[in-house]
Image (cartoon, rainbow, N blue to C red; front, side, top):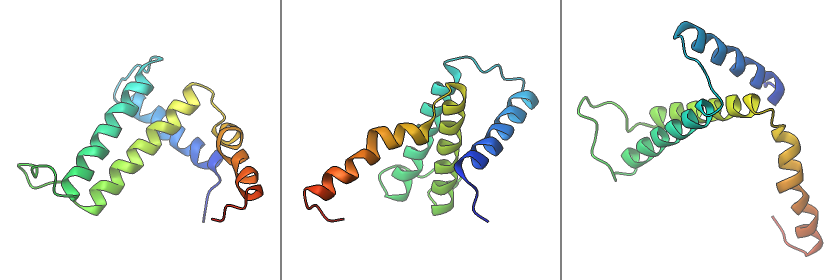
Length: 112
C-alpha cells in the first residue's frame, strides 16, 4: 500500500509527537532546523563510510546500505517535521518552484 504525502506526513507527525513526549523534548522554532542539520550530518557520515572516504566506526557499525537508508529516512522524517512546524505546503511549493519548468523545457524541445 502506498500512502499519499499527506498520510505519510500525518504518521511521521504522530511519531515525532510521541518521541518528543517520551523523551521530554521541547521543540522550539529552531529545534526542527537543528535536527534536520544533525540528520544531514549523519547521512553524510554514512555516505562517506560506504564510499570508503571515512574511517570505519570503532564498533564496526555503519557503512552499510541499510545504515545509509536509515539515515535517509531520518533526514526525510525530520524534513517533514520541519515542514509541518513551519506550515509549509511543500507540494504547492514544488509545483511553483520546480514543476513549472517542465512546460518551459518541453517547449524548448528538451527531452527527458
